[in-house]
Length: 401
Ligand SMILES: *Cc1c(COP(=O)(O)O)cnc(C)c1O
Image 1: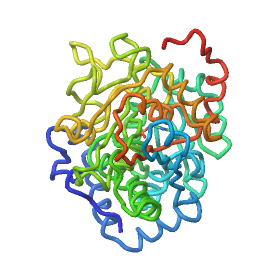
Image 2: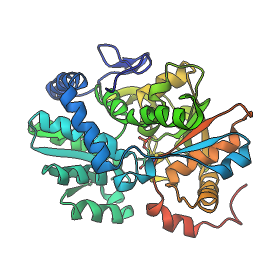
Image 3: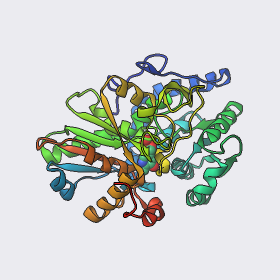
């Protein structure tokens, strides 16, 4: 059974400490109440959990391996394990959450799924589970992102999804989010499937719980391979924060395990071209929750920048905002160039081409002090096929060191 831990439990209003809640238009209150009610039911429902776990096993291919990288181990002089979420069906951790939520949508009697996507990775995961479960699928996507992410748009359409361009504002993710929310208000048969630990309560808690399968498996696999279920450090990249929340989940309440969240520094935290929210952001409301976000003095969202589309998000989920604020989670940032070098390193070291997002977590190893007593797990959130063009165009010689 999956279950909540102290740090991961929200109060009645959906707050982790100072962060979270549900800041939504009046018209969405009923939708969220209905969702919370049903979410509370499935948390305790063994039949639901069995179906979830069965699909993760037989459809997604879980458990994903926990692999000891001998070469990273040699370089950093302590055991370094990779949690291979890149080997999941569709190539990342996002499918874990998509499966959980579509099962919930079915249980609630919904007939169509709506989602918004920036890079398209969550859109593809959603279109995939909609095909599997015979659900109508509508994906809202900024017009600009549709142009930038053509291969993922093709995948979504091939899987049977309708991709609706958001044409207002900056024509990117936040405009797609607005369109999805507007659609949700007007369609009671629609289920809104959010792809990270963001959004109004109960989404952050729910997505974290569905992703917690990652740390559940790490415990069992690490025990098998080292004799102890506890690493000393877990490292994961953070966009909204779902792969990190999943990798940290079972360890939040064990303060001996250090949790390290890696944000996208972009061209540098002080360059004005960054997505390192915890470094440059402050509290405000984004996507229906009170959290840390990048904003100007008028509270307008600042467009984030990262070479990695999955980390190019102006906020972090409230669970991370809270655990970073109270010092439970440490955050560090990694630049575009550092991530690109780390991707190449993992490719030649291990024959594993990581997603650009995950490459940020690998690059972070250079910024952490290790002792020989350390045992490290890196969550390898996804595979790098989608990033090959970026990798091939990267000029190592002119990169900033
Ligand atoms: C979407 C994505 C991320 C970032 O999302 P989180 O919710 O922070 O996990 C990271 N890695 C990959 C491979 C992704 O597709």
